[in-house]
Image (cartoon, rainbow, N blue to C red):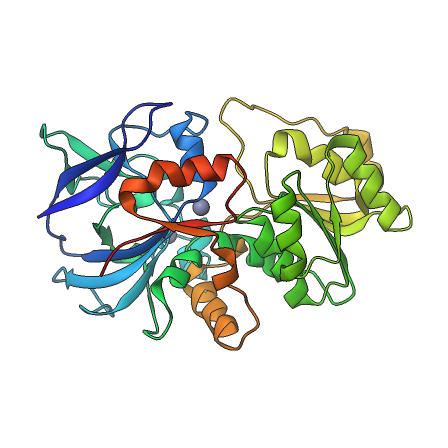
Length: 371
Ligand SMILES: [Zn+2]
Ligand SMILES: [Zn+2]
């Protein structure tokens, strides 16, 4: 079948809206009608060439939800008509990590920037007959996509699909970083540097954990305004040493229990590290451009202050477990999802959506497809 898709063709160029050919699903794959897909900053890093992918053209988009239309003969526990969230790391189910339920560490994870399906072949082809890749084995910037069942989580049908898309990336990344990586406890103090898609969800994750001091730091006034609604108790419009000083001032000079680096770790990790108290945690949830090879942290300072610097992908929990749990929290009224969406776009307007993200106008832009 044919499907409309937004293709990454060249670094620095806008996404190309093209009709591509989509092959039917193979044995373990499903065909999904995409209902909504979030505009995450990671795709922007690819467009700018800051995060290299192995091929082009490639359909970007990795924060998607939709409805299953057809399934391959060997697909289990997924049926046509099911509402699904697509996970940007597949859970192969058989590697040493998946065997322990740690799908966010799946051995197939490093292949998500390569382009092919999980089985190494292609389902998408452009008008010239070239193979087209799928970012994160998802390729969500398209009306329809074919993905392996390893990338599918079935959800309840009462959840609006535009909100379901958000729990494919930004929400679990942020909420999980607070709950499952740092393990924020009641009464703890938290700093969140960068209150975009991930960071705003760290704010609400920290609130869910019972943190009593939640300091939101950003240089976009819009995001600081919004952060209070998600649970921030203090807002800091500063960066670098000024940020560190402001946080120390707010915490009686000792720093926070947990700092979250949710934007540009190259410039924010050290200020966040120094705003963290002794034996505290510094959690990195954001990607760094490939060109940044290292970030300096004075080793004696690390040793003497006994802090932990840790990474968190997908909120450090299997999306198979975390996505249904997050949707339960949403249904109970404990997790804000609708409030995360600033604006919706058509697929044809996707480049405007990314321009708005770059301009700091959007907490989350979402491409919504007409039913
Ligand atoms: Zn993302
Ligand atoms: Zn695996």
